[in-house]
Each structure stands twice: as structure tokens, then as C-alpha cells.
Image (cartoon, rainbow, N blue to C red; front, top):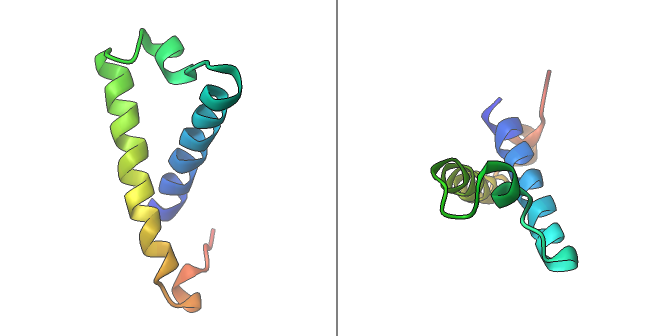
Length: 69
């Protein structure tokens, strides 16, 4: 379950970075009141932690990488 949450957060972060790179538009900052807003900073931190967690997916054996419902 934690793997799925982490993957969703990483995808959100990737889409936000794509919006910044292509359109110069930060969706998280826009939605939550700017980059310095507490909620935005929490979301940025959660996305970063999710990215760090997903690094572990690279080093797991294929048996433990299976995501089951």
C-alpha cells in the first residue's frame, strides 16, 4: 500500500515538474497559495519523501515488486 501511495505522489510531482518545465506554471503553488505556503511545502516534502521511498523499488527483488490488490 505504501508503494502505491509513493508512486501516486511521485507521479503528481512529475506532472507538476512537467508543467513547470513546459508552461512555467507551478500547479501546487497555484492550488495552495504559493510556494512558501505551509500546505505547498508539505506537499513538496511528501513528494520528495515518496521519491526517496521509490528508490528502494530499484533494489528490490522482482518477487517483492509485485503490487497486489
